[in-house]
Image 1: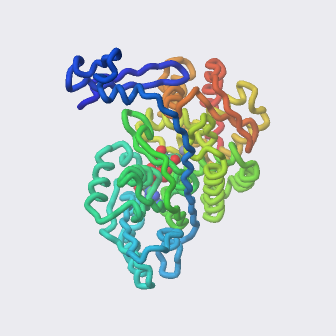
Image 2: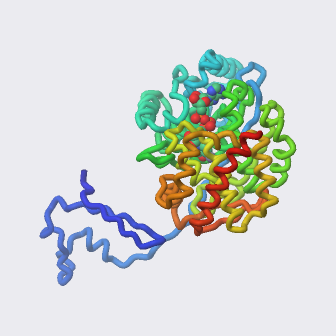
Length: 452
Ligand SMILES: NC(=O)c1ccc[n+]([C@@H]2O[C@H](COP(=O)([O-])OP(=O)(O)OC[C@H]3O[C@@H](n4cnc5c(N)ncnc54)[C@H](O)[C@@H]3O)[C@@H](O)[C@H]2O)c1
Ligand SMILES: [Zn+2]
């Protein structure tokens, strides 16, 4: 370990961390003799030389391919080969592919590994030299995969043992957690391999799977280690949704309501008009909501001007300061979708308390959320406990979510507020009295939810 001393110099709004390495030669040999430049240490002479500063713009180009289909592994369905190939038709070399599967999916699709292998054989037989370099590999499903660093190590070891390059494809099929952990391993292996995602939940098809982020949980924080990385392609196969447990399928639609509230009034109107069908998980309504949510998310990423979140405003993180903290405080008994629903409720009430959102708009949105079946998690003991604590105590654990959110995203605290459906605005300061009122009003909603 060479870097022995680290100093964090904090001069808000910029924090700088210095690492110092003690010289292996001792001070005397390195100290410069400024009076006699000829005897100056070469490293220092170089450092003191006048030079011109350089600055370039580096603008990489990414294509974000998103396909929607049903039953991608059927022989007549050609979506998968289009996604694997993309526009890369060039080399005559076989295209090497390896596959990761969400273990939690296998109870519902025990033959999934076989279906994928057969599909790749069919593609090969049709003349496209795509080669599966290993049997599909399994990753534990759900948040445990993101909480356990050894999962990343295992994926790295597996990738390193296979004849793969950064031009090969890694196909991952699973929920948002498995996409995140495999995505992180793949984004860092060979400095970034080509990832084809097949999300299998409402949340991952409509939100995380079409995003450009991946990450795992470290040091008690959600997504602390992660990367921005545009997937090679995304295939949303609606057939997967049928086996997703109903509670999670419904909760995943919270992200659809989120993106409608922050960006798209027309989509909000669709959700309002179809809230009952969505609550009943009618496939047509769910598929439309998921596809629209995916489109609006991807459009925001591609056209919003800040795909890798270098600035402060993050409308897609609406409600997420509380959501990430609630997931963690509930020890992940709350799913991400459920936590996002609660986080949005808190922030909607807050916006109302500080006069940013009218009573009429608040009550309209709450009705939609209730009719979509998104208020259920309010009854969870974890939510009740954390919201009660935060409503009365300025030092409650939930409120640490603000600082963690600020540090994770960088810059000053910046929260997205909805001022009317489809319109958002950032705020940088939180009024604690108003927040406590908002938390109390959110808690009072549990009774209203019970009437649903
Ligand atoms: N990278 C991002 O930008 C981003 C954005 C939002 C959320 N996320 C992450 O996504 C994760 C949540 O993802 P999720 O809601 O998709 O759930 P999940 O991945 O946690 O999956 C939940 C459970 O469902 C199982 N499962 C998955 N698909 C199934 C299917 N079709 N049928 C039956 N079971 C199935 C999984 O094995 C798991 O046990 C969280 O970790 C969250 O932080 C990431
Ligand atoms: Zn989210």
